Amino acid sequence: MRAALWFIALFGIAVAVALFAGNNQAVVTVFWPPHRVDVSFNLMVLLLVGLFLLLYLASRALSALFSLPVEARRWRAQQKERAMYGALMDALAHLMAGRYIRSAKSAQNALAQEQSLGVTTDTTGHPTGHSASLASQLRSLSHLLVAESAQALQNKALRNQHLALALQNSTARQAQEVREGVQFRAARWALEDHDPAAALDWLGQLPQGAARRTLALRMKLRAARHARQSLPALETARLLAKHRAFSPAAAQSLVRSLALELLNEAHDPAQLQQAWAGLDDSERRMPELCVHAASRLMSLNGDAALARSWLLPVWERMLEPRSDLGDKLRIKLIQVLEAGMDSLEAEWLSRIEAAQLSHPRDAHFVYLAGMACLSRQLWGKARQLLTQATPALQDRQLHRSAWRALALLAEQRDDEAAAAEAYKQASQP
Image (tube, rainbow, N blue to C red):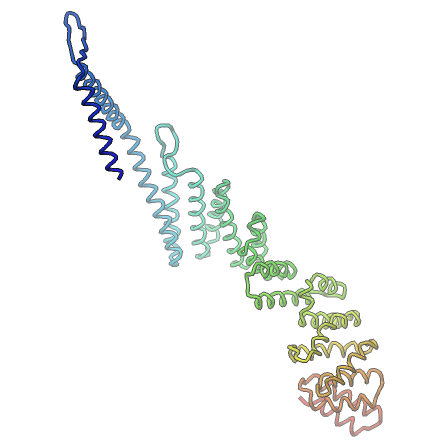
């Protein structure tokens, strides 16, 4: 359709020219003393058009002639630029293939090409190659590749030298992402050198937005764990779990282990209570943390009533018909309650008695009820419950504790034979 329209337009122009030139009788007279030249108007128009075309072509030819040096410099700069990018690609390929020496040489070759390219200027004195921001990014990446190869070769002097140059060349606003990448790599190198303090320092230099990225949080978590900073590691793990960097099960396991480390770092009851208060509500509902915190508080001679208040959610969960608490956790809970049996409140006594009555075949509840009766000097009932629980106890520590309690009860009633047999059973491996 477009070609047909062009043909129609050309035919129209041809018809217009034929009508104008065919009947045009005008004459142009040129006086050149002592001569007089008469030329038809149509010929004069053709001569003027031809003169214009001749001048136009001559000017284009002169412009092309004088631009040859500029074009030659531009071509040479283009060849250097291609060689520079080729060297950069070779350095990256060698690095991925594990050829670190070749990678470093290719990256240094790219830097040399960039330096020679940067001094190439045109007639106005401006650089003819890539822009200044692109040049800065390319230098930073090249220095980073050299530093990465040096890190793989354990050449720390060369690594630090090119790391400083990479940071120096990434100060422009356009190269901010490159600078962040260099800082990330420096933090990773510090972790590889087992220097968590340096890694945390590099991560602390990141902008606020970059510091909250998943990569930065993972590095911070790793560095904090290596530095045994449990509280920062726990806070970082919470952020990673919030960003869904781990599966729910893995995130819960990681948070639980870090919370356990935080509780283990407490050296007195006040520090332990402070650490417990620093946990989230969801973390304070984890049975493992509740039992461990209560056990830790009892080992530090803390308030037994406070420990039992931490154990109450786990106790209620253990009484559920289909409780998912493991045997180890149940045994540890019972041991914590047994450790504070002397100061047991009436409310807890009623809880233990109700649990024993509702679960008469559970040896753990029967054992705990027997120890509670023993602490209240209810000798007969204690003897009855402990005798019932002892054969069914699978945990060796509880089994020995039950036999020792039976031995004490036998001594209480002056039954030396029964006491000797109980001590014998308690001493068996």
